Amino acid sequence: MYKKKIKRILDFSISLVALILFSPLILMLIIILLITNNGKPFYFQKRPGKDSKIFTIIKFKTMKDPKNNESELMNQEQRITKIGAFIRKTSLDELLQLVNVLKGDMSLIGPRPLLIDYLPLYNDEQARRHLVRPGITGWAQVNGRTALSWKERFAHDVWYVDNISFKNDIMILWKTFQKIFDRKTMSSIEEASFALWEGNNT
Image (cartoon, rainbow, N blue to C red):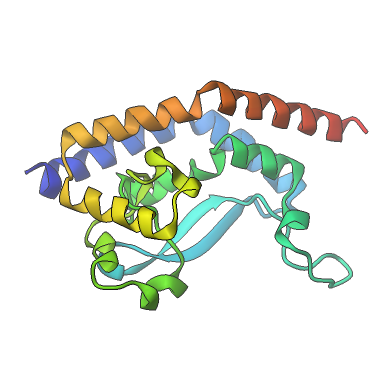
């Protein structure tokens, strides 16, 4: 019952309320990024969703375009803007994915949607991560995230597919908030805020 009906109802309700509550912050970020990104506040990319169906994920744009004004290619480190670094460190770039949850492309909790290029590389067991909607956060994200090997991440994703429950989703949400507001993360926010302030005053 929870997996087939209640989870989707909660996803829709919570994402709608969250979008309303965060609308002032979202509007502020859109205005800032309109100015700093030459009128391009959003980043769109195709990702595989449930049953490997392709959808368009939406995020705040945190990087410059691959080429500068002189048409020279820039690497990823050069492309990240000061405000983009702040938005990434505070995970605010993920905020717009609430729109994807509202539409039904994603869930609040589930395996993170990866690149389309990876689809042919999964074995049969790993491909089971696409039996459910991808999530903004998930079991792998609260158990190591980038510190995990790809094999470990996929194992966590498949574990979640086999163990979806209201209890587990609440636990993952709680652990996600803990990670966002832990001391290390808050320190990163302070550092990013100072870097942003310093950059705007030099």
